[in-house]
Length: 133
Image 1: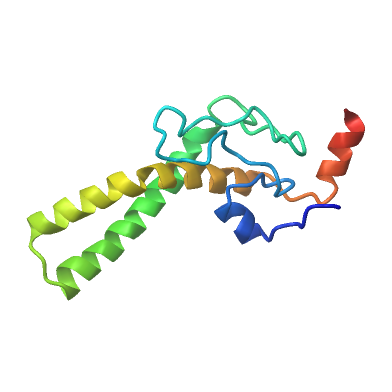
Image 2: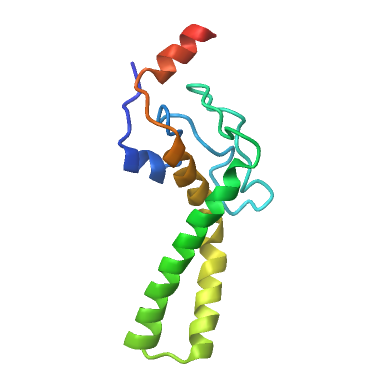
C-alpha cells in the first residue's frame, strides 16, 4: 500500500523531503542532540533527492533563520514590553532563554524551508527512483 502523500505544510512541519514528501531530512528526530542536530543524509532515502544540491548551499538558510528571529523578536517585544510591561532586563533574560530553547528547531526549519524554495514536489519521484535502482 502506498504511503499517503502529505500536504506541503504537513511535510515541512514533519521535516520531510520537498521532492517526495516522504523521506526524513535529518538523521535523528531529536533536535536537542547537539552533536547530531545538523546531520542530514546525503540524499532522500525514498526518492534520491540530494539534500545538499551544491557545496555551501545552506549558507542561504541563515537568512531564513534571521527572518524567524526578527519576527520572534518583534512579537516578544510587543507582548513583553508593551502589553506585560516587563523591564528590559526581564525581557532580555526571558528572550535569550527562549531563543536557546528553540534554537535547534529554528536551525532545522530554516534548512527545510530553504530547500523547499528550490526543490519542487514530484508525485512520481519515488517510483522513478525505484526504477532507476
